[in-house]
Image 1 (cartoon, rainbow over the protein chains, first blue to last red):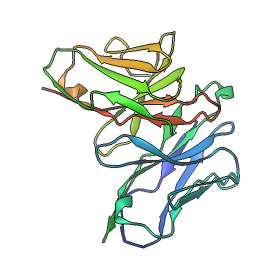
Image 2 (cartoon, rainbow over the protein chains, first blue to last red):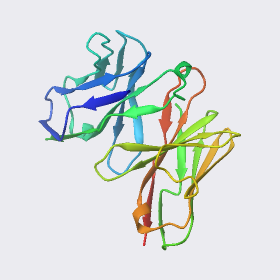
Image 3 (cartoon, rainbow over the protein chains, first blue to last red):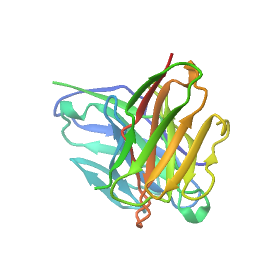
Image 4 (cartoon, chains in turn yellow, green):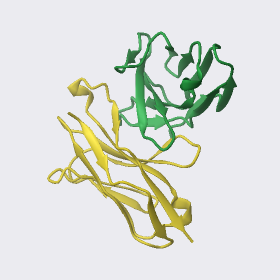
Length: 116
Length: 116
């Protein structure tokens, strides 16, 4: 079946540290991959996405590359800030052509806490 | 960018009453919207897929008579929690899929429901 696995949190970093949150997936067909961020008490915001192999999504200093050979979509940021503290969700969406209705399948979320 | 709103943001009700939550896509049309439930420190659980002009598709284990979904227009879907009980207390989040080619889902800010 289709699934997403993220590294467990919480992840605690000092400001300006390098961030990696691992995400791997299993999927039939050709998924699109997403990272969403959820700040406390809020809904999810799309952070970045990639729709095909070797695509790199980037936004606000975050990056993730769609690696088909390793079925991974790891999230990275070179220098985190306190304001990056949030829960990060990796997700995949199967193409509508595979009759999945475009559903998003989420990983379990990784909580990031950045200390000054 | 694509904006999805939810109303109300927070609601407290007595056990046995019904609560309606609205989800609106503000600057795009959405044939398909999704309703999720999120428990504290947990990932999102897809409850149902809301289809404009047709019946919603519910995920396994979700009671369709308890969680009524109406997708009356291309910009509005409603979720009604009928005869609410304390165990229905949760954070409910909707999303709307941008049909304009990207198939990206954009999320509302969520509705916190507390049933006393």
